[in-house]
Every structure is written in C-alpha cells, then in structure tokens.
Image (tube, rainbow over all chains, first blue to last red; front, top):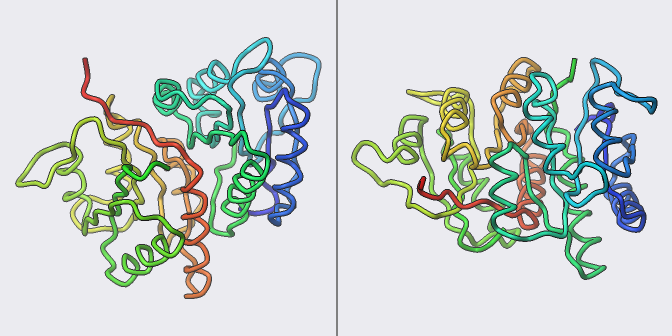
Length: 147
Length: 148
C-alpha cells in the first residue's frame, strides 16, 4: 500500500486505539492515521456531514472498524458505506472483540473485506496488529481512489 | 483463520501456484488448498455445475483469484460470486500481475476484499505471499450456508 493511503480507525477504546496505532507504525506503516471515537463521527467524516473534519475527494482510504461503539455501531456504519455507490469501494477491516459466528457471517454479507477478532491477550493483540500492518505495508496491496 | 477453512486458488501459471502454496505452508497455513487452472473450473466448483468436484455446504472458503485466466477471467468470476446471495460472503483476494487503477477500482467496486499486485521480482513475490499468509492467520472467514 502506498503512503498516500489514509488509515481510518473507528475505535472508542483509547487503549486499543493506542495499541493499534503503535503496532501499525512498528510494522513500517508510515501512513497518516485518523481516529474516530464513535460510529457517528466516522459516518459524518465519510459522508461529509456535521461540523467535524470531513474526507477529501480523490483520496485512498482503508477503514479499521470496531463493532461495539457509541451512537452508531460498526455494523450500521458498514451497512451504510456498502449501500453508497462511492464509499462501497473503500476496504473495511472489522476489528472487534466479538467472535460470534453469526456476526462474522453478517459482516461479510454486508461487504466487509476481512473480519479480525481482537485477541484478549495483550501480546497476541500486538502480534495480530503487527501481521495486519505487514500485510498493509506490502507495496502490491492496491486500494481504490474514492472520488 | 480456522483450520477447516478451504483455500481456493484460481491460478493458471504452475510456477506461481507452487510459489503461493509453498510460502503459505512456510507460514504455517496447513489448510486444504484446492487449485483451479481457469475461471470456468472455479465457477463450476462454486456453482456446483459440471462434472465436479463441487464445493460442500456449510463450509468456509477463501479465494485467491488471478485476473488473466483462460475461459472465464477473474473479474467475471468475481462479478458472479458477488452477485450470488450465498457466494457473496466468500472473501476474495485478487492476486494478479496487472496493477492498473481501472482494474483496482473495478474489483473493489464489485466487492473484492483486497487487490494485491504480484511483485515481478522473485524475492519480493515470496515476501508478499508470506505476509499474506501471516495476515490470513488472524482473519475469521464466514461459512457459506445453504439458504433457508
């Protein structure tokens, strides 16, 4: 993935966010990282609504999306994105503590790219984010431009 | 990724297929790997048509899909999978030599999970597949259930 791709992280847990960011950087991800604390913030950003920061046009993004979040949950964010003719192209990685099979199937049905369960063990969590980072850092990983 | 997930690879190049398989194994991916040499074979397997083999019900699959293949190309297979109410859940990673932005855009629009351009250089190709393998080890895959 080239350095111009912006990594969006929707994660209400400050500790988890710090861990994810640190371990993405450790695996050579130098990309810009933006945090959103609930589903409303990320949707406003993507749909260019509300008073907060909004996305730029003609930019490449990937989204790491938690499910359990205040205001609007990750499932609803995913569903709204995949219903949008432009935002549907944006790759969404679910990154969540929920490992129920029905939830996994539901998110793939809605169109997530990958579903990753956050390991409860600290070291395993770091390792998982490291693996994700190394994958994203591959030069060949190609992300579409969102108009 | 659970050990019962079946990895499908549609890849007409023997050398590339062996490289992919060998390096997934090196990363400890011991899952069953089924190879298809063209898009039609793969589609028949998924759609349970032709002489077989066929996919099984209530199984989890992951597909590594090349674009340039004989009979039906990878983009058409992707289009058919993502238009099917059952098969659409299968995560599809495009692994291909062409990296033009139109194909990247189209495949993401059709619903691929990720688009990975094969590095031309041998060492980089090996490294890329190993990192894909490490990544796959942390991902959950959905079951493809029979419609009720």
